Image 1 (tube, one colour):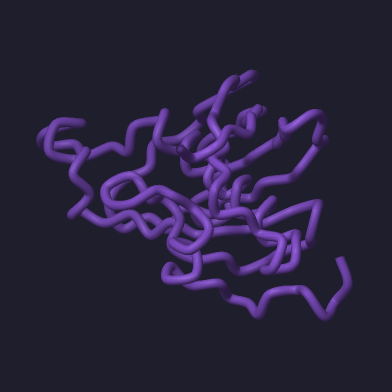
Image 2: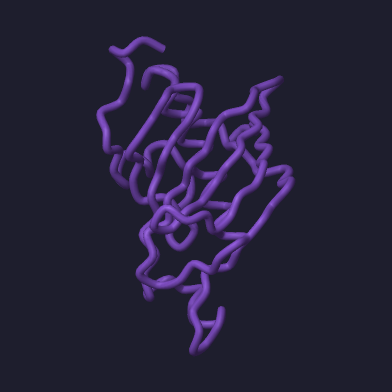
Length: 156
């Protein structure tokens, strides 16, 4: 990818919705702030008390479910793949499914008011699959990490 194709940063949620099929309440990336095409992305999820999962997880002690932190990293990985190709080559008929999570680790809780930083690297691509390594941080401190494998499928 040449610099001429690099997207203007930050990438806002309107542009993110053009690249990801997720919608409320499962769109878990609000902004892309750094991008090294085909290598790395840094995206942001602003966690608010209005998140629907806080009603039951847990009443009186709201905690973002760890599986949603992993999903947010997977969505950031999808954005890395989409933003690494020129817009004319972005396929809107493709979906990428999360097929495997390895080495998931949760080291801190994420709650209302936190700014979740999703730092994801592309490790490799092979036959319609992409392997990512992600680290989620709040205020520079790691809250979760995982290796994530996504596979390409068709929408429809």
